[in-house]
Length: 303
Ligand SMILES: C[S@@+](CC[C@H](N)C(=O)[O-])C[C@H]1O[C@@H](n2cnc3c(N)ncnc32)[C@H](O)[C@@H]1O
Image (cartoon, rainbow, N blue to C red; front, side, top):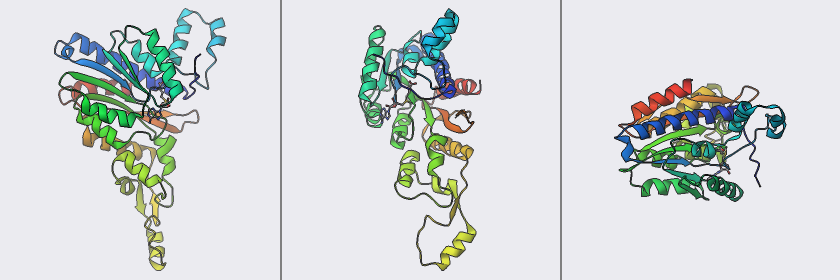
């Protein structure tokens, strides 16, 4: 049985094409360059899904197969591949693959995928990726290993501590999806700084509460009115200044505080109504490799 994993539209394809291009470039460097060849290469898919997907706005493959020629079918197939499968199909491949997925039904699908790639060294981790990645980063010997990590959550599932742990290895290239419109912009209420559980969630995500100062400004009129009222509600009297652009810039600056280098280009992924949903970022942790890695990533992100 093939579990249907339905998410995304064309923007998903855009994202996966960028990842695929980078993984190809990465492996050709790590295969050709004698200095780089000494490292064991890892591809870590921390929100791995099933390895394949169906898109809500595409024709079912069974319909297309009646009309399409072989070349078209290749396109269709590529469209349906998820990140794990794309990574497994690389030639040359990574030496090790780590697929982390918390949904038990999806990990079962990943086991089926692994069985189809017998010659690949695949570890399937049925756990929460934050917990696993933080421990994994600390346990690995980074003198001998290098990795590309892909963080592709639906929402704000990545904790800042995980980003810090990845950066601290000085050995990881990171592709990460920011849920700029899908989650963050929606949490940033207009007339006041959000209250309840949301501020803590935003602070855990960004690793600082400085987002308040970056995304809000004091509303002079409300401040005057508040000063007359017997209230000490610190969240009120502010108005939202955040835009999709400023949220993306803030995240990029946060990445720069821990990674060696962050690609200045990023890719905004829009939904069918042209509203930004996600933004794809790249950051490199290794001081020696970062300039080349970022140059390649910038080129891919602009392409
Ligand atoms: C957007 S999907 C990933 C799609 C995948 N990259 C692909 O291209 O096929 C996000 C996945 O993360 C999984 N997930 C959500 N929270 C998680 C967590 N804390 N740890 C591990 N996996 C998680 C979900 O079950 C889902 O399969």
